[in-house]
Structures are given as C-alpha cells and as structure tokens.
Image (tube, rainbow, N blue to C red; front, side):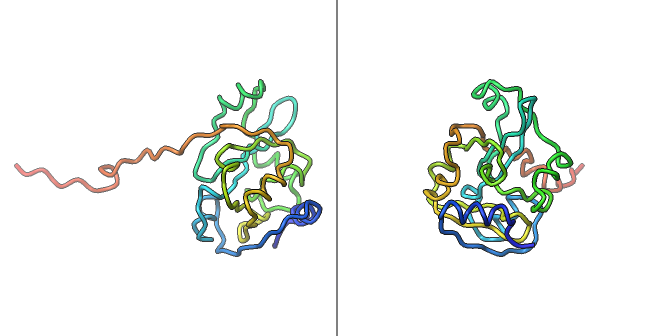
Length: 173
C-alpha cells in the first residue's frame, strides 16, 4: 500500500507541498518516527475518540499521550477512546492502526495539540505502516483548517526504573 487515496486527494486539493518518506514496517507512531529517523515530537499521531455526538480526531505528537480529562473539559463532551473495529469502516483506504491525522480528508472533526502548532516540520502516517508524509509546519496548519487548538496532551511517563531493568547482585552472607 502507498499513500491513502483520501490523503493524496486532500493534499492535492489543499495545494500543500509534501514528500513521502519510506521506512521499515512498524506497529505504532513512535516506532515509525524512529524507523524514518524523524523526531517523535514532530510526528503527528491520531487518537480517535467518540461520544454520542460522533467521532473526533485528537492530533498530538507521538511522544505525548492524550489527556482525556483536559479534552472533555475543554470541549464539554464525554469522549472515550474508539475501538479499532469501529474505525475500520471509516478509513477504508488505510491499514488498521495507520490513520492519517487529517480529519478534513475523512469528514471527521479534529482538535490539534499545541506542541504541533509550534512545530516547523510535521510528519504523519500516509495510511500504511511503511510511509510517512512530511509537510512544513505552516502547511500542516493549513491542512488542519479551523480545527480547535489547545493543550490536550501530557508527556508519556516511563514507569520502569533502571533498577527494575537490571538484575540485582546476589546478597553475600
């Protein structure tokens, strides 16, 4: 699979310049950023949320985690995570788990995390687990249109401590 047809058409209609970057097949956004040698802080991932009003794309850097509490408070919506099975019918031209963060390409509302607003370059899944789209930060904002922006994420916490990852020396009597 190459770039998703919906993404390619949306990029063409928007008139933004982009390049495709190939990489080894990966399973998530952090691995894709690493495989393509791009900063995870500039890699826009999509977290799909839902409530009784429909779906919402939360778009944030791969290095961050969505803050559902902040998002619910900001939008006044009881949003929860959508399941992969539900999403398969929405993104027919994409591989499962490789959703491009372009709500406008799929007719889905989006909200953009502030760190991406400030990014000089943005990378994102092209619709499969082997290619990324690279655009300038200003072109990415053009692609986002009038999507609301704000702080909707927090840094990932690494729960493993060094001592847990190393075997302990045996105690001497």
